Structure formats: C-alpha cells, structure tokens
Image (cartoon, rainbow, N blue to C red; front, side, top):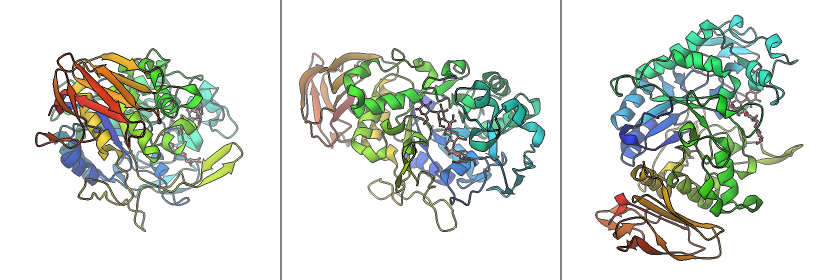
Length: 500
Ligand code: AAO
C-alpha cells in the first residue's frame, strides 16, 4: 500500500545505512522518537554472502544466502528487540528486502549466518532453493545469462542483474518462500518494505507476492493494516516505466534527487525558482506514489542513477539546503539518508572518473565486525558515522514537515533566480537564498499568525527561548527577511511549533 503506517501521521523516515540493530534501537529511544522521525529504513536483515575480495564491501548485503535474520547488523533476537523498542517510541521499521535474486554466480561457501550455499549449482539449502527455482539462460537469452541491455524488458527481468542468480518469480514455490520471509518480518512488527530491484521483477509476479502478504502485527498497528511498499524502480526514461508499479505502492523517484541536485548546483542554467513546479507537474509520478530523497546509498557513490548531480554530505551546505527544501515542500513521502564516511579514490576509466573506493563497507574492526555508532556529548556521531539526520538543520526540518502536514504550499515567492520562499498554509514558512553573492532582503508573507518565532535552521527552541535568530511576524502575516549571501546556512525556517 501507499500509506507508510507512521504513528501520529509523521511525515519522514531516515535510512540508517549499515547500522547495527542495537544502535538503531538506542537511536529510536534517544533521538528519533523525540525529534519526530516516523521511521527507519534498515539495511537488508537477511543472511548474505561474505565477500572477501574486496574485503567486506557494503554491497555484500545485496547478495542473499538465506532468509534467516543474521547479518553484520545483528541476529534475529537483536532485530526483534530493535523493532519492539522502536515501535514503543512510535518509530517504524521498514526492511530492505532483496527478493529479485540470490548471490552472484560462482563459488560456494557459508553466509553471514553460517548457512552453506553453492552458487555454481544454484543450491541454497537454507531456504531451500535449487536450480529449478531460478530463471535459466534460455528464458533470459543473453550469452552469459546477465542483463546486458537496459533497452530490453525481457533481459532486465529474466536475466541476472550484475551476475546475481535471478529467481523465477512465476513459480508458486518461489513466491511462497518470499512471502513467508516478508510475513515473518511483519509478524515481528515491521511497518513495510523497500523492495530492492523491483524494476527487475515482472509487475504481475510482484502483485502475486504482495497478494500473499499478511496484515501488520496488531500489537503495534490497527487491525487490517497493510504493509507499506516502496519499490526501487529507477526510471529516468527508458523501456520500463515506474507507472507499471504504482498501483502496488510507491516507487523510489530517482528523477527527484537528480533534479534537486542540478538545481542547487545551478547546473544547466537551472534556478531555484523552478522548484515551484517540482512535483507531478514536472515529469514525475504523483505525490501519493513516490518516495523522495536527495541521495541514497547507491547514488551517493555513483551506483544507480543521477551521476555527478547528486548532492551528499560531502557538499554539506548545499545538502542542508536541498534537504530543507525537500522536507518543506509538499511532495512525496520523504526519506533522509544517513551515511558513514569513506575516503574516495578517483581514477580515470574509459567512461570517465570512478571512485575506486566506492565498495568500502561500514566502520568495522579488524575482524570485519561493524562498529557501534558512538555519539559525543554534543550529539554528533563519531568514528566514521556521519549521521546527517542529527545535523540540526536536517533534524529540525523533520518537525517542520510534521507540523505542516496536510497543508498545501502557499505564498510562493522567488526573485526569478536562486531565492525562494513559501508557506505551508498557516503552519510553517521557509526562505532559501542560494545566490551566493546577493542577500535575500525582502518583506514576505509567511501565512503565520503574529508573534515571535524561532528560526529552526540557526537554532532551537529551548526553555522558552531561541538559541538562533528570532523572526517577528506582524499582524498581517508579513515579516522582513534578511539572509546574507555568504550566510553559513542561508535559510530561515519557522513553524507553528517554534513560536517563542
Ligand atoms: C556486486 C559487484 C558486481 C558483481 C556482483 C555479483 O559490484 O561487480 O558482478 O556483485 O557478484 C549493489 C551494488 C552492486 C553489487 C550488488 C551485489 O550496487 O555493485 O554488485 O549490490 O552485491 C541497477 C538496478 C538497481 C540497482 C542499481 C545499483 O536497476 O536495482 O543497478 N540498485 C539496487 C540496490 C543496490 C544493489 C542492487 C540493487 C542489487 O540499491 O545497492 O547493488 O541487489 C541504469 C538503469 C538502472 C540501473 C543503473 C545502474 O541507470 O536504468 O536500472 O540500476 O543503470 O546499472 C543514466 C540513465 C539511467 C542509468 C544510469 C546509469 O542516468 O538515465 O537509466 O545512467 O548510471
């Protein structure tokens, strides 16, 4: 379904990429609950192949060995404990499910949970799957059984995505095994799924699988609640359209992050003034059908789509502005990215520059165990975890979006270039200045009732006072906004919940 099953109609989730379950549970209690986050997308919880060369890359988790819950993030017990503790805080868990394929072709060994597999004979006894459960090379039709052309629908859906063994989803048995896995997660209390590589599965097969899904666990959700579905479909034009999937749930709208990146980077003559039209009026699926994000775990390392336009934590000023816009603007269900750091190593390939370190896995000890997230007394993450979601500007805009929920965009203003402002009904107001040189200096309609408001970009409302700028709105709803061109974070955001 399209509705995310959040508590209290909360409006945004965060992807805690590669975090351990124990750390996510603690984060729900100490941070995500109090700051109004609706949920967490977690890395794939099922057992995966252990990749030694390169050493323990992040992408090994996209190579399933079984549906046992046992990974570098934790085991079955840890997962259950996390789901329970997060739900207690009104923070939902969304599982990334890798159901298009098993691991890459070739070799044999044991997965992260110790299960044996043979990827030469297509044998996964811990499910169990055998060679009959996979698409064979003749239904695929390419010489090496891999997807070679993204212009061929049959190849995309019946061949192996970068060599990974492609399950035959027309099989009743395979559908049953996948549905059992997803239903197991639901029984624990997850609220829904991010469906990996949905573009590589036939919509009819997915519909059959989703038709077998159970209702959510009534310990946490009203009876009859259906799992939220966000399908990873990269549609930047091409032979497969996201519109083939939207009757089943939301799709990941990759065009959004690409356009946002281009606009804030001022590429191709784009300006912030265009953002007024960024929703469905501009070449994208409608509001209710999309999951939107500035970057994700693929696009931040040039896997997937969007290329050099994508904004990440590495461009922190523009990234904060792009996230703030996304959280302020009424379009789509929002997912924020939370990353770990790695050193990039750019090398020239025949097609252009590539980061040869894009495989590097999460912060880990010498034995490959993922390290816990440590947080200093200022609330910032350390030891390699970036925690974009904890940056004040990002974190406070989540509350802005919750406060503005259900109110449309009004009072749009722009200077024709890189300065914009708008309100969300009478609930919230934001102004952004991406000019660089020129100040935003204007008297604008905020839509808000008169009073003093704390700007949640420069500070926090704390003990009835504001640690940042205070904005005074007059009886006519107007206020004078001044944002210097070289302001460290050139935005102002106020809302009904930030009244001093
Ligand atoms: C690894 C190794 C491989 C090895 C394999 C098996 O890297 O060398 O062969 O193991 O041993 C992740 C990693 C992969 C990794 C895999 C398994 O990214 O590198 O392979 O785990 O460990 C396509 C899919 C999309 C997928 C994306 C990465 O459609 O589903 O590739 N994303 C998900 C996950 C991702 C994961 C998997 C799927 C697999 O989020 O983390 O892979 O479970 C076009 C197509 C897109 C296509 C892209 C990239 O995009 O349209 O569908 O995404 O190409 O191939 C312009 C075009 C745009 C085009 C884009 C390409 O923008 O307009 O259409 O250029 O950049």
